[in-house]
Amino acid sequence: HSSFIGRASTRNKGRISRYLANKCSIASRIDCFSEVNTNIFGEKLREQVEERLEFYDKGIAPRKNLD
Image (cartoon, rainbow, N blue to C red; front, side, top):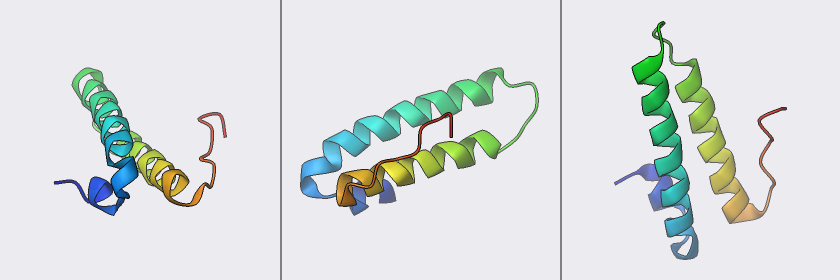
């Protein structure tokens, strides 16, 4: 069980599950094809999941990737 899904409301558990699965997929691709081992991408993806969870909970819009 993921702590992200556990923190989501019942209404938003499916939404955050799909979002988290997408971010995990991106992280695994980066890990597989990256020449240099780094955790920067994982930290940024985790921040995006945190912001999305906050958006579902409180309505605070997450940052864009350009920001």
